Length: 92
Image (cartoon, rainbow, N blue to C red; front, side, top):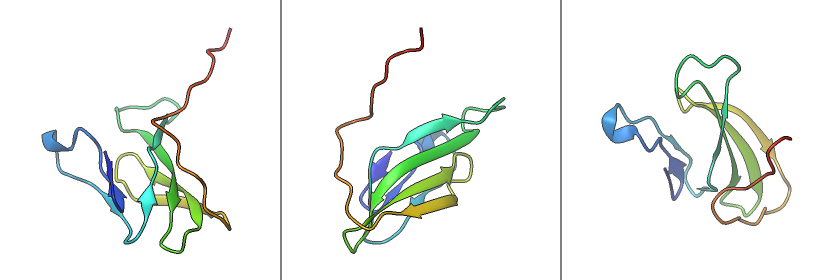
């Protein structure tokens, strides 16, 4: 679940809450990318586009288990937000 300045897994009430937070940042809805051969439901990465306090955006990659930052790629401008997720055609 995302909220102003941070995020935490929706299943958090069932377990210990792990959260990413950076003041003044507004993350978009994340995409979960499962690890190859994932051993648990949170084995993978969360990827989100985040608007920073300066108006510029960055792509954020979080470890799905620990919610710790794995990578960040800066963009020199603000990336507009999209409405709930994205859709793609299934492979044929």
